[in-house]
Image 1 (cartoon, one colour):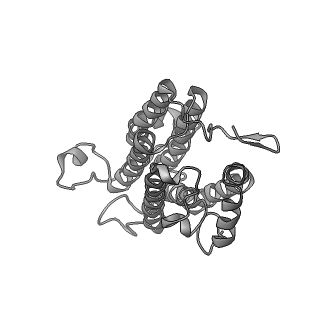
Image 2 (image 1 turned 90 degrees about the horizontal axis):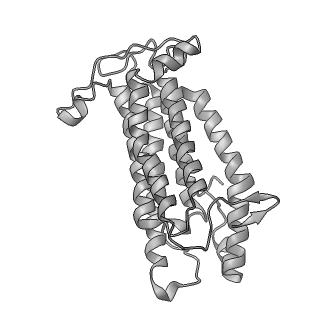
Length: 269
């Protein structure tokens, strides 16, 4: 594992040994997350939690009528269905990444930590949605025909989420395709979306995480999530990755840094 300044990377970078139990743990935890978020959005799990905290569950608005039985049978308002869709999209991306893209070894403990962390953050987002004291739908309504629908934080959050998730996934697919070619062994991937920023996959992740939080908890929670994410990336992830890549790719990494000055997102950071 990479180590710098006492920080350790929870991913065994450079180690491609298969760890079936670790991979299964991560995939299993990500697979059950949408159901857990559904129980929060419907009140099955959230009403007891909110009651314990002295808070009130926000009664849902009219259920969605999309014309698709699979969605309509969920009996969720358009607002809550949008948040559930985000949870499903994030889980699907992670499962596809682990099955077909990610090559690094994932031991059981880091797999459990990452899977549980995603569920914990998602659960905060969905709890904020259904709490009458924090929901951006309070006083507006939750569906078509409601006043101020869709709320600006939801619309902006959904756009950030979609853009970020697609950016992260496409960048990782491009890099994986490059790495699978034997002639590219020992070379950093510097084309595609990675020609715009050296860690643009993490930039995409930060975007969709912020979008999910903004849609769930509004401007304050979105800003808190963005700030904590930026702090973690700037002080931990990027230093660890730069150290690893500098060691693995030597001068090629230095040339790439000079050619591509942005770390996460072009023209931003």
